[in-house]
Structures are given as C-alpha cells and as structure tokens.
Image (spheres, rainbow, N blue to C red):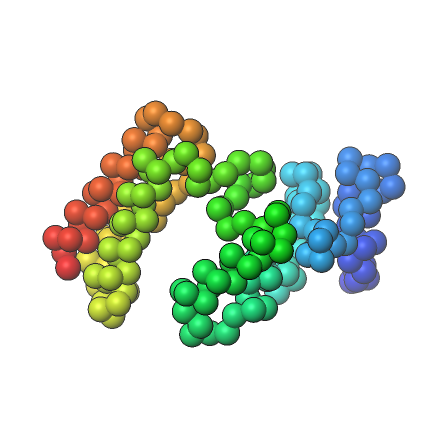
Length: 183
C-alpha cells in the first residue's frame, strides 16, 4: 500500500525534484490551484493514481469566480452585463473575450466571419430546441446538437483565416438549416 503524499510534496516529486524539468510548482497562482505541467508531469501524475475525477479540483477559467461571487441564480443577462462591466473597470486584466490555452490570443476580436454564424446557430438551437423542451433523446435534437457542437469546435477559430474559418462558417450555416427545417 502506498503512503499518501501531501499535494506540495507530490507536485515537487512530479516536477522532478528541486531542479527537475519544472522545478517547484507553486500550489496556487492568483488564488487558483496550479494545474499546469509538462506532458511528462501529467503522465507521472496519472501513473500515481491521480486520474480519478474525485481526485482533481474543479477547473474554472481565470477570473470566472469573480463574476459568480457577485451573481445569484436568476439575476439575468442585464445584471451579468453590469457585473462584467464593473469588473472590467476595476481590473484592466479582466475580460470575457474568450481565451486560449496559450493565453495570448483573443478568441473574439477579428473573427466575426466565423463567430457570428456560430452565435446565430447557438441562439437558434436555444430558441427552437432547448426553450421548447425537446427531449434530448429525440433524433432531431441529437442531430442538431451534433452539428452545433461540430460547428463550435475551436479549430475553426484557432487556425486563423481562410479554409478553416470557411469550414466553421459552413458548418454553422448547415446547423441553422437543420434546426430551421426540423423544428
């Protein structure tokens, strides 16, 4: 039977010791659990048995908690917009423009060609499928959801302009057509 290793010591060992690949990993960054690591570090963590969902903390995007601390269920979109605007004024780092795993790209600015059709397809799915209470085991629901999720795949935004954004735009158009004709 293996002895449980406290979190900080486990991270130090997984990082390869004091002078390992990543050195000492801080337990928290900006008040959030540090879940960063190289592929080798992640593989080592999984090898130690840390692959069960109960063992891993809930992951939330940076700053998201600041929104939820000021909201209560049912506050609505107007209250949300007010909270987001206030947080932007208080902290110039705060934004909800989306983010990438590299944290240096805007997932929003400059990509209206692909994002607007995605948003339209998503809104249509909400209005015609979710708001009407269509059961999730309905074949039309599943087909529409499949196409919506395929259309919203980040690859269409991540790979820039040209053929990839054209693919995303076309899938969003097809999703809207499927929803419009099926519901």
